[in-house]
Length: 557
Image (cartoon, rainbow, N blue to C red; front, side):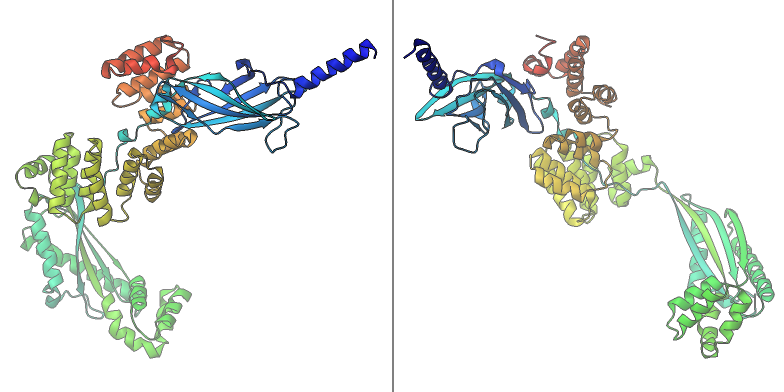
């Protein structure tokens, strides 16, 4: 055989051998890139995507490779789901990598975050099956460590919902009484002045005059005639009724020695068609629908009266049951009730809280910044008004803020039992579910609290915990809290995060630590150092955290 031909055959056999029968070479670190690198916590997980760019003439045609992403840390390691790849001559359903051309492959990885993963390395393990051979290739490192800034989301710092009081320092009460007249008359009769209604009205005015906490602001007299007869006559009749009622009222005020009763106003309505319509609609008159249709059809008062008189079958009933009720003057007094001052309320809290209404008690808790006093007040509410859900809810709010979660839950449940529609109790139970990492229960509770003021902060932390950072930003809105700033950091809106942190009402160690993160991500080393110093001064344990935090890998190492 020709030597050249023999050489060529031998060379071809070598190529065939390298394409199939020889073992896989070791994977090199340069074949891989990882996004992100370092890894980063999203919600409660650590996701990553490793991209493999496998070179030509590397992946054996008869080889099947199981690639397993493994996160390795000091106390152990955690594997993600493996990915199978195969050569062109392998029968199977895995992605195929060409021997001749190589190929690009993405390898997803995901881990449930554990704080031990903070200092870690991401490796790829390779298990090869090639014909009858099984062997393992050396693992390859593809990423360094985990950034865990997302884990700074803290449900414990969200302020639970307070069930508000309805206390008003000043409220307006209205007292009223009617004086009825005979048909076509404007004389105030004695029997009308001796009704229980009128006696009560006069007594209320005398009481208001004698009580420093009550002020008569206004008295109004409104007089009416029933819609029968001519409009001109009824106008004069209603006006005379107004005058006679006003004269009676002035005499009564002199008799009762009431000189200050605010503004006295008086007017009249010639024909009370509105009152007529209401009385007919509320009656059981047989043909009331017919009467009401006449009122809808005709607007001229004289035409109305004529058409209704034509209903001879019902007019007698109207004259007996409806029209007499429309011949009257109504006196209405507007009386301002001045509530207890803060000093009076506080004094009664200390001496005899039973003399306070539930609204005054709940209000009292809002005019002190002492949590112990607030807790004492809310306990008093639950004792004096045990059926009012607000005392239990608000007591639970204070216990939540002390991280006494067991007792807080008991009170939130009691509040929800007393008022199943309480959005405050629903939101607060959702917060406790968040603290306990029960996300499904938190979601249900927050859905029941939809529309409640203050729910945004709770929802924001929920979304941070589930990894939906964009939704968290939307939920927080304009809130100026550490959690709101964290959402902005995680969505890379560093300018907004800086503004939010600068506006936090009571900055703490976490506030300054997050500001340092903003500094690190915007390459501002002085911002990093200044804020880390403030954070560590408030919480010395943050010194070790910052030392190991990859956020600061390029600034404090």
